[in-house]
Image 1 (cartoon, rainbow, N blue to C red):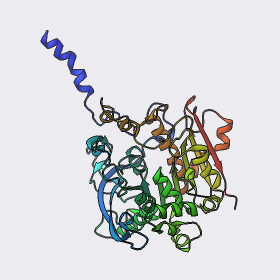
Image 2 (cartoon, rainbow, N blue to C red):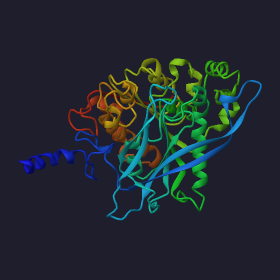
Image 3 (cartoon, rainbow, N blue to C red):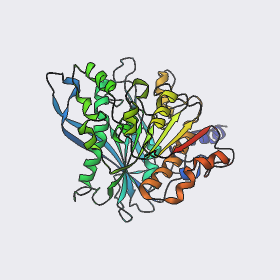
Length: 427
């Protein structure tokens, strides 16, 4: 009898184990659209530290006194890797839950698995590869989108995800730091990766092409991405920042019409993906500011977004960006969380604050399904804009989608619940 009970118990033991054939974050579901599948490259991942010197320390500055500091950033880099056939792509990521500023929600570390090999040798045989920079929300983490970062690296990109200082789960500070530094961090990382690509001591040497760069931003990352794309901030936004920053006017350099902002426009960025970008409902942009967006942009949103807004939020940014080629993918009835990884068992443990789960979940959509659809459309968009893959055009054909079901690349009955628009620049 004891032997029989042990045999019956074995399957339950195995259910808690994960091997390379088990479903991991980012893997395609049976109904995943075509381009959600991983590419042909094996994937490596490294963590690097960089420092942006002499930046405005807005948390300790005032109108009369501007303090400077060396701003540290942690980057996670995914890249095509050279692995023996026997080597597995498996990595353990360290994440935290909780709220840095809330004593009732202490920081709790947890781990989750991914499909990459830590510190693997790079494979430059088909390089250099286009660069993609990824920017999280407030609060967030460089590891919030591993379903997407690993996937894109497998398709021949170097993907660099930023931990934005003062804006992560572990170090969230006053919001003004995020308002000022988000687009500045993005531009610095582009320049820093360009420097490392020419550094013979760096694994990025000869691996990455920063002349073909894309930027993916979610929520506050989307706020920064719209600014990088040319969407200068409004006078209202600048005045609000100054009033809440002891009179310091540092955000004015990112305002529409300011020569410093115009001169900072970097045409190495060839494509922007703005996922639920925050700010429009708070007057961050006006019509003139949105006209400054010139880089092709894919907007992704939930129609019931209660953080960034939809009709007066993301959709309004899309409609105001009249001078760029732009696309809008909408998840009908989804809220704000149309970008992160799905929830793991750790964030679903009994007794936790509901927000630990809701950081990763939508109450209508299966987050794994959202992940697969994002992989599909972002692959098509970046492949077209950064690699000139013209065969991806049918996957972005909004006019064709209106006339057919299922959409190109989707299985029958699986494009339900989605809307897709495309508009050309007016100039």
